[in-house]
Length: 242
Image (cartoon, rainbow, N blue to C red; front, side, top):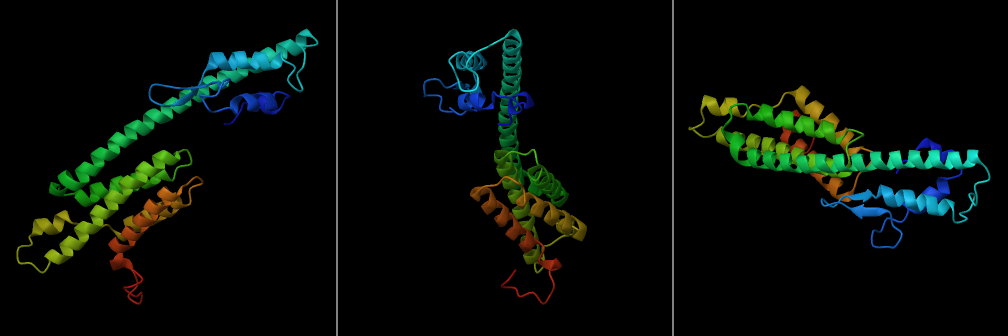
């Protein structure tokens, strides 16, 4: 957690780190609690009381208030810390709400891509837009690891659907039942669009925060991308490599 500058530049940093370091809500003296949604938040009242207790209990570097100025400094620091704690709680709750909304949206995309979108005449364009937006968002510096995981799963669904449509269309070309509408509905992405997807996928893979499960999905996405873009690969590249 990034503490306010007033703490990092003064003598209270070790005191605050000691209080905030006790993250287990079941341990006596912890200032954290779990909300109804399961978010671990800071109890501002307990935080304030704990700060004053530490300041008045002979904590190292702060064993007494020798003058009014020092007491005023302590009050100002605690006030700044409480403001920071309030912002921390608000940001955490906002992120949790965004993740909850994103998870619901991803389920809608999953169902639509598998069942509903097949009847649309511009499904390739829709899937590309979803894929492009998901990759852009997952590569953003302010995208959390959990949100990146959900977005990557959406992108994986989109590229897999594009790939499956492409392969099924190639198989249908030999059939006498293929129509002009079939050709229009399975329009391949342009070279520029494919290059854009690859660039954003690489940026997402290189994001500063990652995990093993996220990497697995990103590499699965990269594999599906190469399978979809086989027509763009040089002819001298062995099929086994692709």
